[in-house]
Image (cartoon, rainbow, N blue to C red; front, top):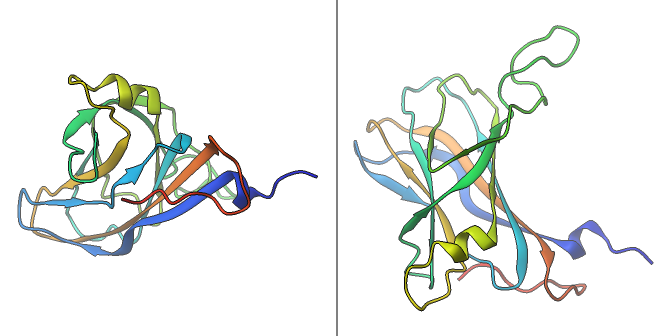
Length: 173
């Protein structure tokens, strides 16, 4: 018998979809995800209306504990904002952009109802450790360029569980 999708993927809402605003230069962090029981982590940043002017910078942080995810780490990401889709070739399609490696990116104001797909590699998280601790906790940080809010939310999908079972282990610390 094959496993159900929900038995091999843990889906966690780590930042509610709403208008996210912080003072100019302020930050908004997602819940911290604990990778101990999973081999892959993908964040889905869902964008609402982009009519506002805030363009936060997104950075991935890793660390050894629920409070210690403070070291910026490299990651891969792609957008699902532009491209040709549908019969009219309009933007906002389901065509993904090129995979890019980086240490941060800035959310576009032109991403109405689009998505960013952020791939975090647990070995990269662990390799960022410069002490004797094991880095296996991860969060996203949004650093706001202005005090104006932008609508976005974040879902974490943890996959390839180390110990598969019908009910997957918790991933939020």
